[in-house]
Image (cartoon, rainbow over all chains, first blue to last red; front, top):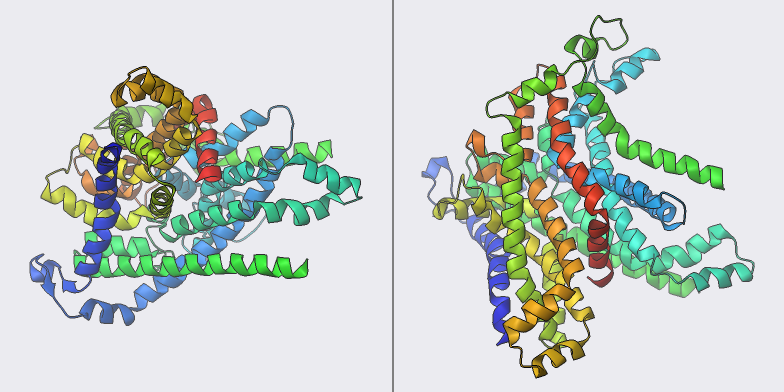
Length: 288
Length: 272
């Protein structure tokens, strides 16, 4: 009888997560756009064929992968440092922890607008500073080669606190005796980081890595508000491309195809990360 | 060692706060002061930006109100469904629970922005567009995995003798939940509630596609629309005032509920 209590939650999850995946798979084999009068007509894999030859899709895949790799790596490195800092005992730690959490809690669009002002040419603080020390205008948000780095900054700023908190939780599960024993045997603090802390932190690193990777792969709000995918499409992510296909070009069949392939690529990336972590622990075992 | 730590703490605080402080500074600047920050000005500070944002049509507080409505609706619906589900999962066999946990974790990791198109189709076929409370359904669904995982670990931590004793006293399932179990998982419920509220407050792609009426926009969509309305002009004073007003409620929320937020996120990590 008690199992009946599960039904509403299971139904809602199936409706919100399950149904879309089924619907996209189905839609990706149909033409459904303004041209068909928004009626789904089977088109025998034409969407997938188009995807294979769609330069914009592959450019966006490359951009999304580049964005996710760089921002997630930076986030994890910073998060480890912040977690180590917050794990020590000092006065005012609670307040600092709350403040460091703020960027994570604010709506992405709010700060995306904020970043647009900070990176503004010529009035934003960064350009003003560059001018003050005699540099040429940097044109951060209009130079296709560097704009994506500005979006990385925005993402790192926002999501590092989250990863730091998960790693902090992990640090607090490591018993202190381990360190005491290590130091008694004459171990160096830096060696403790690599021989005790990081190995024991591994499950938490994996968790925050997978979580952040998935979120960075689906990056949408930040890009849409901060750059709109520009300049010259250089910051357009897969999610934004799928959104544009559906809402601007009104091509639902192709939008669904883009989303399904984005999902498949993400699953692949997660598997890859998981395998690397497995390998890493094997190697460490072997070294011991 | 001490001095080095102080340095790093300062860096962390600066990194977290500087972009926000810059918005605060900008929001009180006159247009002229923004264009030439280093020059002398007759009038450097102003409240005009706030006046402009608050007297626009619809006024800015309207978006805040909309977001509060969506947040409360979604949080209530999520808890209403997630608490019974988590209780039920804490009673099923180990194997079933393990499979369920795996599915929930996978769903919690899912980049939900990819779901927007199918959810929009649902909204169209059930006529749920432009309805703030209707947003509670997708939001509750999207928050469900995390909510159930957090509440499940809270139910698991309760000693089973407790419920046994209540059963022997003759309390039925509903009474046991209402008077014994739910009060005991209060802290976990609070953490879950605040995380769900934050999620619904900040959610963008679904609110963007479900709501088109200007007076029903939630805060994130309203801000994005302000941003999109004038790409080439620079009313950044007004933008900044809007971001400050949009950030303020969350600032308070985080400072008041930081303990619940931290324990919610960390419990999810340790036991998830």
